[in-house]
Amino acid sequence: AGAAQDPALVTKAPRLAKAAGAIDWTRTAKQIHDQIRALVPWPKTYTHWLRNGAEPLRFIIDRATVIDSTNKVAEGIGGHSPGTLIEAGEKLIVQCGEGSLSIELLQPAGKKSQTAAELQRGHKVPVGAKFGGV
Image (cartoon, rainbow, N blue to C red; front, side):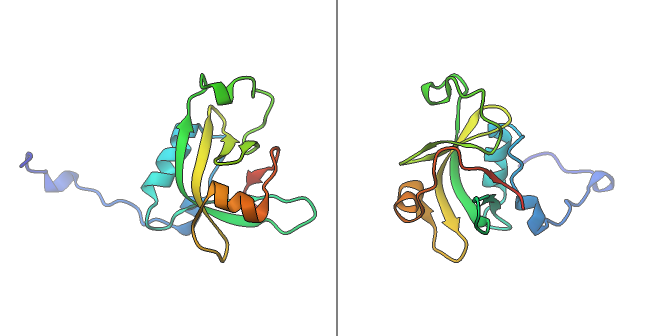
């Protein structure tokens, strides 16, 4: 058991709003990863695939991993702006403000949660795709 808390110093955490789940891709990969982990099971973390000539598609991000900026996958990607998909396949790797994030499990609007590879079989999100708010 830990030390007793002083009741005079106790504060309540603010209630979470659904908007707290929106990903700001200019943040670091670690900050976004921590946001994803913190907002399970509610309100969950989400972003939108900003498709050219089509409605943005909302994705709930269920699981992701930070890709170290020294990782081979991330070499030479400095020209990509935050929120840009830099690798698509078994994983979706998105450029962040610092480093990149590998999205492994996600849920498209109105669908069940699926792996990045399963998503690619149905939606074919191309390298260079943009993610962000609407």
